[in-house]
Amino acid sequence: MELVEALPKVNEWWSLGGVPAELAPPRRRRLLAELLGVLDDRRIICINGPRRSGKTTLMYQLIDMLIRERGVAPRDILFFSGDDAGLRSHDDLIEKAVTAYFEEVAHGDHREGRRWIFIDEVHKIKGWQLWLKKFYDLKYAVKFIISGSSASKLRSGQRESLAGRMIEYPLFPMSFSEFLDFNGVRPAERSSVFDIDSAYVARHRTRKRPVAMTRLFAEYLLAGGFPEWFETGKLRLWHRKLLEDTVKRVLYDDIAEAYGVKNRSKLEAMLLKLAGEPERVYSYNSLGNSLGLDNETAERFVRYLRESFLLFEMRNYATSVDKQLRKNYKYVLVDIGMKHALTRTSALGPQEAGQAVESAVLQHLHWAAEAAGDTVSYRSGDGSVDAVVRSAGSLLPVEVKYRSDVRKEDLAGILDFMERFKAARGIVVTKGELRVVRNGKAELLLVPAWLFLSSL
Image (cartoon, rainbow, N blue to C red; front, top):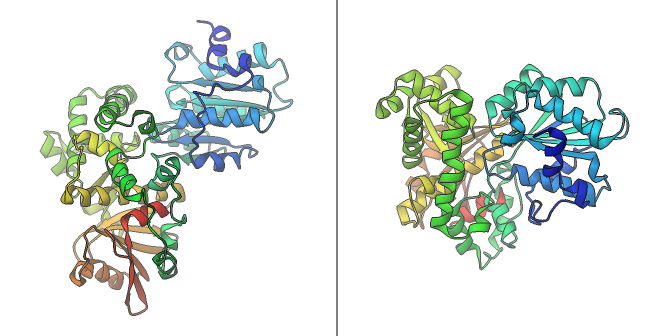
């Protein structure tokens, strides 16, 4: 199909005057407001994150708001996707689409006025970074907003051709706080993890737990934060949809296509193994041996999973980089619902609930770290803790003790870490306790899981 015939079919606002309601639903992710604040910046906006996290919907909502709230003419906005099989067959798709758009639709000089060009799943288009660099450097009066679900291809494109020309915004599954928003429940005050202190504890001592919180927290721990959960609502059906539409498409389509992986069943077995054993640490050698893979293949498979936004890799915290590299790794899936879909978990006993809370805490810390440029590690051995968040010289250990009564001996590891590494503050995520433990000048904050997660 010729581009001049294909483009109107994916740009319905040209004929309708607005975005169809089903493409731009009223529920909005928090990132939308942040993106609206940078639309006047000339640099290319890149929204990256896992499949089905809502990147395409976010683009349609931006288009809708440009038309309805900023008065942008519908024909001044172009959208197309690198995931569209009908369009991908065109060589030099970006050049041809942009040229066809200016010749057949915009009917104006490309340096006059302003146009908005949205390219979804851009990393699937050959040479995408070179064409965007060309249009950017020629100073076309165009604001490019792109999205992608391959970290390596997006970041290599930025390094090679778009340095200083592109800003990245990660879009992960919804945090528990966003999940509460979508359910019409007001979450706790939003905070950076570094803002949780004794004053925070004092403010929340008198705050009543919302009536719906227990039910929604249990729901979130099983369903996770992918937005399409709200369209499904039935857990077993949702888990099957997550496996078929997200996990298997990433493993068997995206990764296979991008990296030429032939042994895809082993790749799936690795993801399943890491989902089922979240507390374990591995070297590439031990992980490979458990799956019948050599060390090099195991390392490569982990990188593919990481770069496709399916999991995070945590190093052991040490003051020496060499010591960090010599230690084993810990893995956290990007979403708690995806973890339970893989392990076919539809109910949580006390032990499973504790593991789920730990996974959810680690996911939230990683999501926040990706957005802020921080790092998240774990610590084994002396001063063992579940997570260590490092930001601009600040160090914050986080430990999960999801039980009714947190005893003094449960705090030994994190207190040891705080003393050993001179951390002024630490957080213990609990089942219900909210209090401060002082250790000299340092303070250890015990915060209930629902409150901690609804604050981030």
